[in-house]
Length: 513
Image (tube, rainbow, N blue to C red):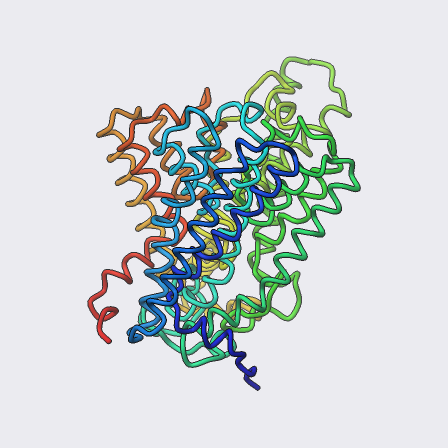
């Protein structure tokens, strides 16, 4: 049965999504304004208060002016609104940031907001302790709202277009064409579908964030750091008011709690049952969760064995307590970068150096490239595409041994079509070309090869902490030239929406009413 539509929902249906997002941003600005007032940080609170009032007034006027406009292709309009939210909305989100941080240029503030709303988490602030807590709260809120936006947009906008990973599991309709998906479509108009899923997912997203915050408080974390890390974990933005998890009060217990909640970025089945086709009968049959579990166990084990062999070769004394701590540090960091969050365990230095060898940042880049689950806040190529290629490779190797074999993927994988591997490989090629293109663009603006590789992968996978951890030394993003920052902003938006969504916008059939 379809739900009864309330009057305010009917009013929202007639207002462009981008205008509504501006109104939400104006309301969100009141949170750091109130926090700054309560903590007597009035210099940082006033810009947010003034910006909230002005933006709310402009949003209200725009809503009244545009609600009577004729409605065209709503699917196209929603996809364009997403692009506008990630590229144009940071223009106003950066205004209070410039006034709240003395000496911060507008270009750096804009870069910071694009990084936050795309849940990338790359920051121009090298010393978090020197930044007002109000600003850290604003960065966390923007990242948190950006994560919720992609939660809703993935199923309400990208799924009907067979984008964002859904092209692997749906029927053989043309990619980029609006099609019905059973449970994924509950109303005839896309904007109604968007608000329906917003109302369905908002309580889940909010309660999970609240639960993580309370768990971190129980573990002994400071309230402000706990709420920032709770929002950063659920949105996989990795935004933190401290330099690393070693500076927190929760310690190893806090890492265990964050580790548990990072699992929600591995598969959408962990928090919603709104996928276009039935995923699984049981959670342990989810191919994304099974592949993620394999990676989370295999990568730390390989790192551990690599260091253990080095220890045996030099006949150094082995401390089992240190090796266990190192294994946990590698496991936590593996899951963190697999979900493109970018948190580093307090024990990661032990995991890197306990045998005297170092673990290259290339491991972290590889994990970020794989990414998390389809229709989650995680970036990267996505686990489901990797799984489709794995199953295809497995079947092809079996046919080499038994050419007449008739292979079946098994019950857990029957939702994946026969041509899923072809579509997944096509996306891999497009992703590789995107990496090459943005590396070339950065090289034009005098960015070195190593730095270009790290920055491109960090932007396209929405894993900002790679810029500080993957190389021999941290890359100072604030020192990049304006053109290089613009290129990275475009790469972050492209990584968040994925290249296929931009290709769909360039499709002439998509623009026909």
